[in-house]
Length: 303
Image 1 (cartoon, one colour):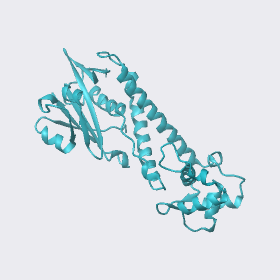
Image 2 (cartoon, rainbow, N blue to C red):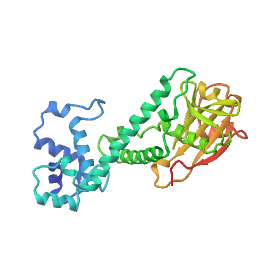
Image 3 (spheres, one colour):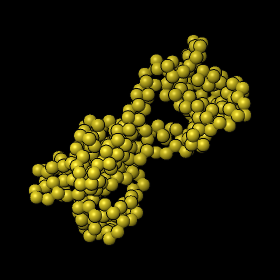
Image 4 (cartoon, rainbow, N blue to C red):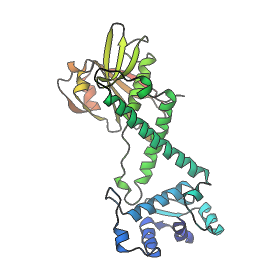
């Protein structure tokens, strides 16, 4: 990463594209080495490594990114150059607290995604009619908080990544079903769901449903849908056939610094409204279910 700092030693603003060109000459890369692409085929390997190096240097506070696709040396970066280090690598950057914090968040996000995939897989592989224990798939309050913090960091990181060359291929994360189901499950357990009272038994439903809620002499199959800013979902056969369908709308929650409550839409016996599966926008869903929806405000994060 040291050559990237050296290019900007003149204090001027440099484009990432020009830095890549200069580095290609410095390292005397062959046409074959330059042509090598990442597994996705969307970007050259060398360009990708330069882009990530610039991101790391930015997170360590050694460079600034005044406009998209460019960088310049920050005061701290100038101090580093004056100290004449032999090399600047990830280990070197770990002396800066903001970089170690960034790395910790990345590890947390990766762990969150692994946990979410594992919980989803456990639910899908459970035998039909079986119940997956809550501890196997539903998050605790603290885990929900951690997941929300990780997702907000990931959204912000993706937004920054999309500003670098080739970064437009980076996509914003999908909301994990384990997170949305855990938030809805907490609302049910705490008696804030408009359908049941407080005295309920709650569990994961395996292949039968997202959640099973036992209340009195009945057991309801609950399906949970979640949307972000776009507010568009597919209601499948299980969603239509459920006893209760819950649509949890996050909107721009993960792109904001605020913790405003979310909206949850509770629909009993969705088959009475929808005669078949379909793709539908939230606005159309509300119109179609007018008079039948119960709407609550959900605070997903602990205070």
